[in-house]
Every structure is written in C-alpha cells, then in structure tokens.
Image (cartoon, rainbow, N blue to C red; front, side):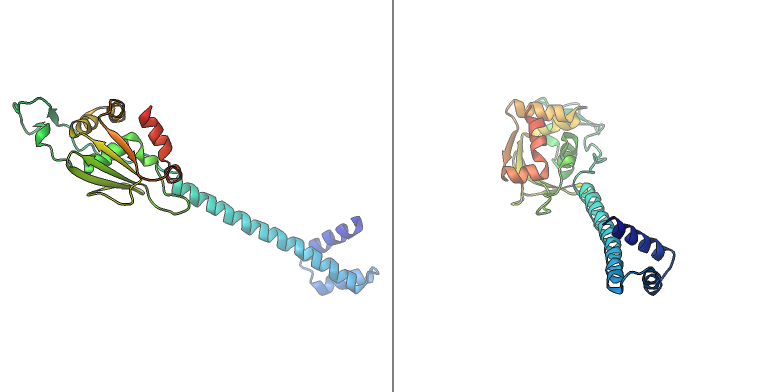
Length: 225
C-alpha cells in the first residue's frame, strides 16, 4: 500500500511536469509494472485530483451561500431617516395658543407614513429580516386612533396607509403617545414606557415560529422589558 501511494504521488508529479499518460505508462512499463496495474494507478491519481477540484467547488459554493445569507438576513444597519417633527414645538394642552410656523397643537398634526417609519427605525425594527424559508418580509400594522398604516421592512422601511393581511404584529398607539415618542431624544424609551403603562398595545398576528424566523422575538422582548 505504501508503494502504491508513492507511485500515485510520482504519477501526479509527472503530470505536473507535463508528461502525457503514454509517457507515464512507458516509464512504468520499463520498470516492470504491468499495464493493467499502471492504468489503475493513473485512474486513482486522477480521482484524487477530481476529489480536490470537487471539494474546492463545493467550498466556494458554500462560502458564497453563507455570504449571501449573511447579507440577506444579518447585515442590516440602522437606516438614516429624518425626524418628521424635527424643529417643531408641539403643544399638548387643551388651549390652542401661541402657535407659529414652528409651533403646532397636537390636534392639528396629521399623522403620515413617515411618522411610523421613523419610530420603527428608532425602536430597532431595522434588525428584522426575511423569513429564511419563505423569504417573506416582516410587515407591521398600526392603529393610531382612527387611522391605519402598515410597514414592510426590506432594505428600507416602507410605510403605507391602510392595513395588511400579511402583517405579523400590530401596534395600537394613541396619537399623543406616538407624537411624544417621535419628538423625544429617546424615542425607544418613550415608546417602551407607553407599552408598560398600557397605553400602547402589541398584538401578535403571526405564530411564534414566524415571529422568531423574522427576528421579532428579540424586538418584542426589548419593548416589553
């Protein structure tokens, strides 16, 4: 067996030097080896080479898939979204007074999709990702008083008016709490406090497996703590 391994090694080296199969056969025949045995050695040397090539190809494919999966599900970073109420002073008292271009009463604020996209980004929804098996995107419904919105998280947070039947969870938020979170320097903390106070509700619409697959459970735990 040791002699055979040595012969296979020599055949490989001979091939690297540019010798043809015929030249290798002639050389081994001159050394007294039978033609059948020589052909067996040549086939074994070729199998080893093919195995290395196949292994290399498989490694490259696995590495490429790993990079693709990481990029698809785990390489997200916080989005750069502008605060829709930046620079505006909000009045919350019952009397509408002293309003200007930079001051507005909460009753006069119109909730737009940008409000929800900004809030989701601040509370960490940018960490959510596609379901690795179904490739479905995370979708979140919102109810703010009489208004409905839904947000889909892909390589951005896209919020639209209305509700989605594909939503995984739903936030029911009073307008006042939403606005207070957005104008705060720590929106996540204000939003979390609204949940703890019972003002904001989180309703799960999808099963735990789906929520786990899209990364919701860690977000849910952070908001409920």
